[in-house]
Length: 170
Image (cartoon, rainbow, N blue to C red; front, side, top):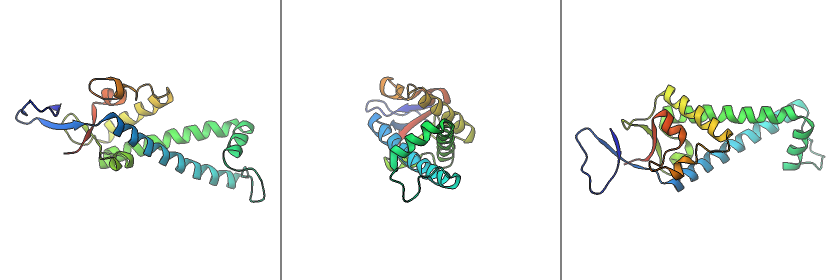
């Protein structure tokens, strides 16, 4: 059985005691992972645009966000494909990171990990369910992730539904 650390409670035999992650640390980990995925997707988008001829070229004054907005408005399907790719990339990244290492790079950077109620990293299936629910939550403006800030257990909706916890390792 998983229980948070308490100064007055003594752990029962076989009980795992881990400190739940502070909300600010989770937010920082999400930010690190989000920036990394956005940079990765942006680089692939630029490479794909150059290959398909959508790239502005070296002599063009168009660049940066103006160019991306222009391409998105003229080629709406590009924006849809970009969003789908970003979602799929995030799903695969989070699933494999949690199943293989117990944490994404962002969580590792701030000293967090994802565990089941038994205190072990989640398997591939549980990680996939957690990641899918997280992607859906982000698609709904992050409403499921906000639960971590307002619930007593400090767990996001994807953690509650997948049976996982984000904790600080001992």
